[in-house]
Length: 319
Ligand SMILES: [Zn+2]
Figure 1 (cartoon, protein in one colour):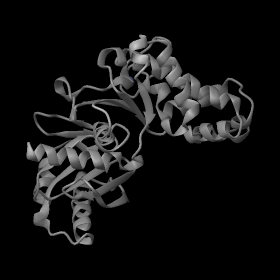
Figure 2 (figure 1 turned 120 degrees about the vertical axis):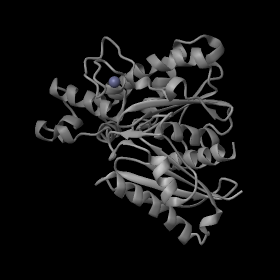
Figure 3 (figure 1 turned 135 degrees about the vertical axis):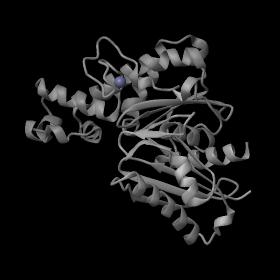
Figure 4 (figure 1 turned 180 degrees about the vertical axis):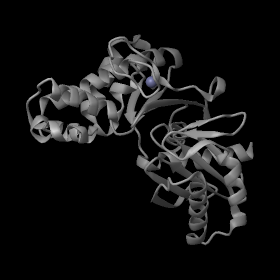
């Protein structure tokens, strides 16, 4: 049993961590993502691994696996990776990194790795059936039951952000109209606020974001305005919770999770989002679910993904 590395490769930053055989995080690093070319990004990932080994004074032979989580689609048959916010377009990332690093490399979708990490070491640690949802730039989900990740046919399970509703008017990045992620992701929360301001909302948010600054408004600004007493900002989170409950309710009936873990920028809003979410979900479910269901935020912050990818890769190797 040796050391393992996990990396969460985002469009802006890379978080990397080295773990011992017991899954204890020894050291982590955070770096800006190099996006100039696929070769340079692969070189960057390889040198991040080497740096972690050097700083921890661990010899290369003791590293058993490297796990990568990234925001993209991984073709399970060919190993080709395509990621819109990274310079990967049909690139065999695992195979290329394996040559550069010399150990088996596993590449998976970042949300799956975040949820996997939370299910093993974070908010889902005490439970067997974990549904995780992230509300960041986009919206996605993953399902872990008894420690194993459910990929579904083609590895496509979990794309709940692209369930469309007739009363959502926005065109999504995927090309469809009405996708849930256009309103409940962090970008969606900002969009709701911008639309409200355009329709004439008054208050703190309106004072802080006159029309010329409106494009810069983020979900964090909406939350800050709520904390400072803006009533409209609070309503944005309530409406977001109501929309999200539309997919959580059937998911609970279908899967019966012990816990639903919600992460990403929107979840950082805390009670103003979680309290109405729990209420909407609870009101519309059979009492049997209501008594046991928990809906909680993630616990490991920006390290969820490295815990998940490191452990996932190590288990793939052992299996
Ligand atoms: Zn969509």
